[in-house]
Image (tube, rainbow, N blue to C red; front, top):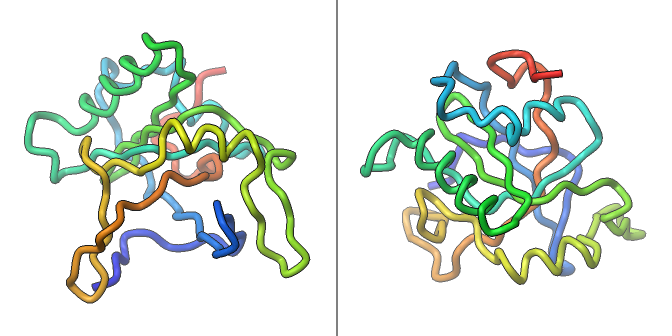
Length: 169
């Protein structure tokens, strides 16, 4: 069955010739201050023409504690390793992303699709998959889990109506 929790952006991206659609995130829910990590919150970039590479999400299916705290812990772990990691708490899931990219990191194609540029592709070598609660995320299509995990992918910065509290200035 198709996952209807995400809707698609019109702009498409790809790591190969096959276009990949970016998911739109659900509106944010209020979260406890200790799991926000404001300095690493993607909400501070709200509305800017910036992208980040999504490498994981944690949601209510996480069984080892609070999913928001687990996502925040992963961001802190990546930061300790010197990786530019970010967090976004949505209404039903928390996203973990790495690095920031601009339009110059994308390569428009004559057919209207957009391919990832060298900086994005290099980072995908380090973070090839999108994790779901810490494990590679395998989509289920027509009720059957796919053999290959979902690759990491670029997301656009959240819109103002997706952020629970104003971004710190």
